[in-house]
Length: 100
Image 1 (cartoon, rainbow, N blue to C red):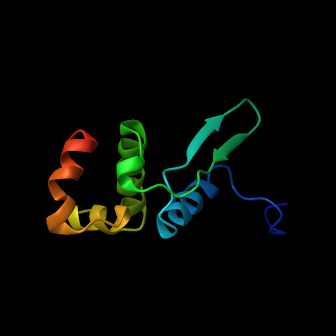
Image 2 (cartoon, rainbow, N blue to C red; image 1 turned 180 degrees about the vertical axis):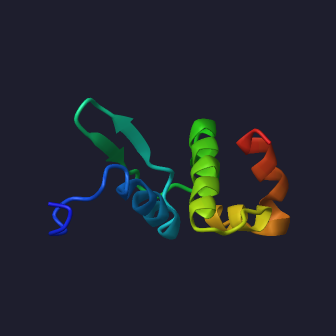
């Protein structure tokens, strides 16, 4: 079925889901692993200030993982871009709210 493009390799869709969430500035997806399936839960757009601390931490972690598998370097600027934050206005807010 993988050869016909009907299904993917186990786990190959996770990077695609995280990438799409970043492109559309969505909160980080939540993944639930069952015995026979993995479920990706997507959430509607939220501003950074509206995300819970757990959501911000998960978004930072997923951003870091995505940058790694894309062979790119993560920086404060890539995180600001991810959360659509300006450098001057929200940089201290980012550290304070993300637990950093």
